[in-house]
Length: 400
Ligand code: PEP
Ligand code: MN
Image 1 (cartoon, rainbow, N blue to C red):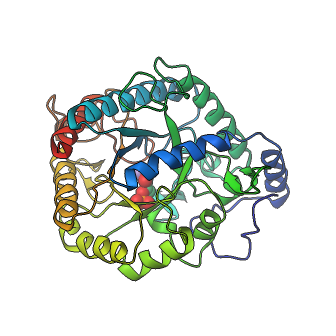
Image 2 (cartoon, rainbow, N blue to C red):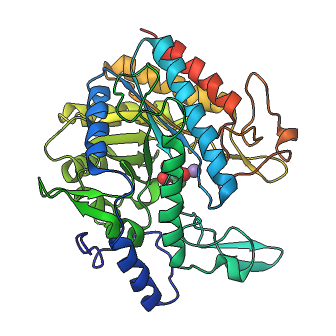
Image 3 (tube, protein in one colour):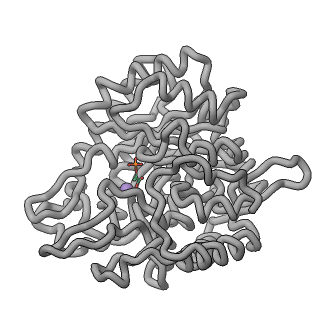
């Protein structure tokens, strides 16, 4: 395996694989595959994110909470990619700023969970951890972790990349934002280290290591422990990386992450994706941005207004209100404007499909509509109309 051994470190949220021999076979196979995304494309994205970090562009990152395997999901990925591109066009024309679209796709197959098990009608089974680990169905067979699923994740990511690369306007050579042919790079949470580590590749020319699983990877709120395997993994790769930052984060933690992940203070290398909640953001974010900026970090700051604003609807479904999402985005922009720092963009869970998972919008989804088309495998996503609503809001908020 090319990745530095992470085995000795404690890594949160890893599956209990049933059988070490099968795991070793799959890890070996993954280590023989070509990288899913060319290493040079990660460098190109990093340069675009450097422009965003300098205040000259915005990042628009979006896609499903959890991608699924199968042909239906491939078709949905196309509409999600198209929606993201349309949003980028709305924002870049409306706010007169280049936008860097970054799919949350072609790799988003593993999920951290708040509880290791799920109980329904007195039956307790392992929690669903994403299609790369186990199945969503509520049976013991579905919920058993299966290492072969990581191979299917690799193949599905490759097929997804093929599909979104062939979409109209998806010209990977074009590097000017706002014109047809905006390149669409891809990202996912680097959660499953048995998948990520064997896909690390070395650039022969420079000797630098890269995650081969996607252009950009991030570390989740639940796995950003300073002494854990996920931070160690991100520290050894040259891709641009993100870290999710929730309301309990301290400035000292972020400064330590800067030291580990971006010791040379290079714009474009590190993105903090803050997910505070519409209420907490005003309390927590200003102090964090102020201290990290004062320490000289050029980190890019973007807002994830989804994960701090999840509510349980009366029928028991998880949902998010467009009003809460809008409030967090507004607060994010205002806070940065007050501090004189750059509100660097958005991280959203969305789909191009007409789902009814989040509440509100100009063609509103109501609480009563949630059961109509609630198809997410994990968290509630914006539908296409709601995503475009937020793009027009962002165009207004970011207009100089
Ligand atoms: C997610 O992005 O789906 C997620 C689990 O986010 P966080 O790490 O911010 O909780
Ligand atoms: Mn999510």
